[in-house]
Picture 1: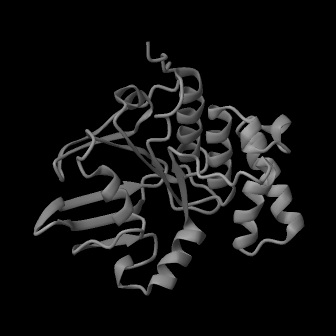
Picture 2: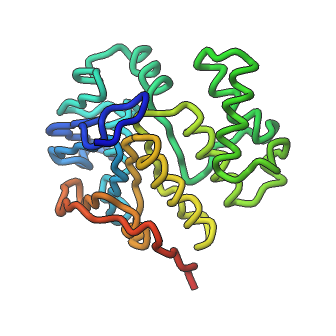
Length: 251
C-alpha cells in the first residue's frame, strides 16, 4: 500500500456522507436540490462528480465541505464525526486546516503577486513569514510558475491564474481537495495542465480530490466517476485513469 506522510492510506475513506437533502425556497414553494444523496471519497482518488447544470453537483460539494448546511443527512470527514454538528467556527477551522478549494473564477486578489496569494493562506494557518514564503515558492514551482512568482493576476493568462489557485490550494497540503469546474474557463492545453495537477494531488499527495465538472473530456483522468442528475446519483463506477490522456481544445 502506498502511503503519504500526512494522509491516510490510499483507498481509505476521507469523507462519507449519508442521506443528504437540501431544499431551496423559491417564492412559496421549495425546490429539493439534493434528494437523499449518499457519497464517499477516498484518499488517493480523483473522484469526478458529473452532471448537467442544475443537477445538484455544486450544492453537493458545498454540503460536503461545510459551506452549505443540508436539511438532513450527515457528513463524516477525516476524524470528524458529523461535520454539521460542529459550531460554525469549528467548521471554518476544519476547512482551513484540511481542505483546499479551486473555483472556476480563480478567486485571486488583484493587488497581490502570485507568491503573496499563496503566502497569505499559509500565514492564516499560522506559518511564520519565512516558512510561508518557502512553501509558497515550492508550490508555485510545482505548478510550473517559478518564473511568474512576482506577477499580479492582471499580468497572468487564464491558465496561469488557475495554476496560482491550484498552488494556493496545494500549498496547504490538504487532505481533501474540492475543485468546482476547474477547467471551464480554459482552453484544452491549459485545461490539461490543470487536470494533470489534480491527478497528481491525488496520486502523489494522497489527497481525496473531488472534482465537479460537466466536461466529459476530464473522465479520462478519473479513478471514479459519479453521475448526478436532478439531485440523485444515477451512476457510480470505478475507472482506470489514463495518465497519457490528451485534452483537445473545444473547436
